[in-house]
Length: 68
Image (cartoon, rainbow, N blue to C red; front, side):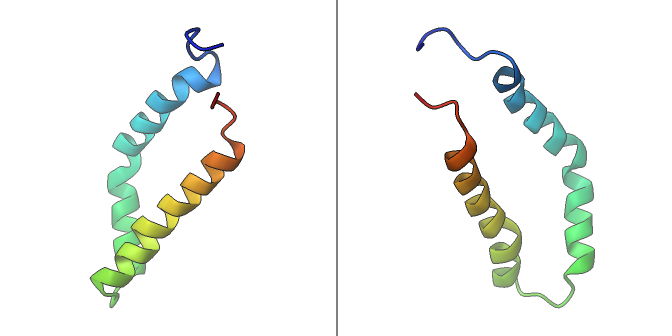
């Protein structure tokens, strides 16, 4: 029902995701930089930013289950 708020896993997921990125963002960036020498900025944007974003949107829209 609208207005009841999120409960369980849905309530803490946003905070958990934010904390994970704050903790691991630097390590992920260093890892990506080490495995992609010689790549152009355009290739980097496509492979590291655009592709995971689109896949996350597709996954969330298919399996989200929190929309009304």
